[in-house]
Length: 340
Ligand code: PEP
Ligand code: MN
Image 1 (spheres, rainbow, N blue to C red):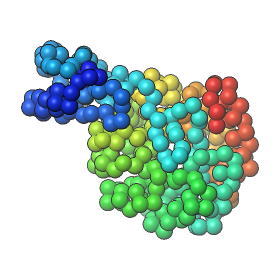
Image 2: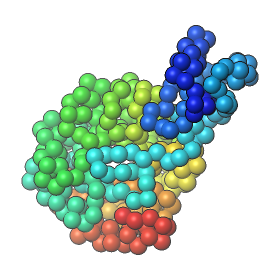
Image 3: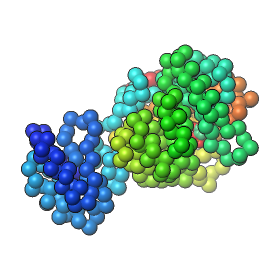
Image 4: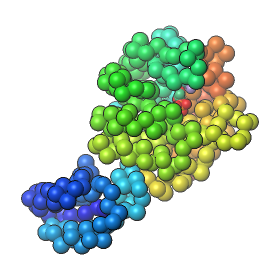
């Protein structure tokens, strides 16, 4: 439920609505930084909502009370009709410019990361991706460089100016990752790690939330809700392919996710064609499809020596292939009224 206040409503009127929400056992939530004075009422309203609408409608300063039928109240477009723009230093995600984040799956060394960072920047990437903490299916696979990897990413940012997107896997590492990263990535395997979602929600850091391997879009939005309801609306959703019966590709890209999420939520949507296909040969087509379908950005794995990559070499583009892709994407973006 949202309570839309008169733009002239006084602080005292707003305060008394907030007190009343708490008194009857719900949580008031003010949408930060928005011109409209809207108070969201959070909690399970199901039984009492008709009475509550009337109750709040009668209070001073209230223009209207609306029910939000979506379960993801704060992530819903019903609550926030305008697109949310997530700001990462001077990069804006969710506006008219399609933002490409590119870089290696894993940070392997300083030389590798900085070399790739320069190359993807020259090709037009606006963000650098790279994992320092790696979620691997096998405990015997490369697990990432940890803090050393974060330091390398920070150095790459210093040298190129590209803000950094990197994964955080554990609540205990959130402060550490925040020290170095510009965007906290929540990986597919952690989409429903609710403790982690709440923890990143309590930071002011932008979050890139990846869809779970077997998660519905409704569940993705409920996970975003965990983050936003802790006070952090800087959430970017990421479609990264889902598990289906099809085994020709590592995952199945759900292109439908883009228009559906655009309809259901105000949050920006990016697509990861590297994990969604698992094969560099298909990254090009799926990247173009995503931009044509309205994605706000892409997360692409690029490696200068994919054969020897410590993770995800087979799905990583060589820098020259990435550059060729960016050149084509500019034209696709233009065809749908955007730029890169
Ligand atoms: C990654 O981006 O490197 C990654 C591990 O992604 P996902 O969580 O989507 O598998
Ligand atoms: Mn990867």
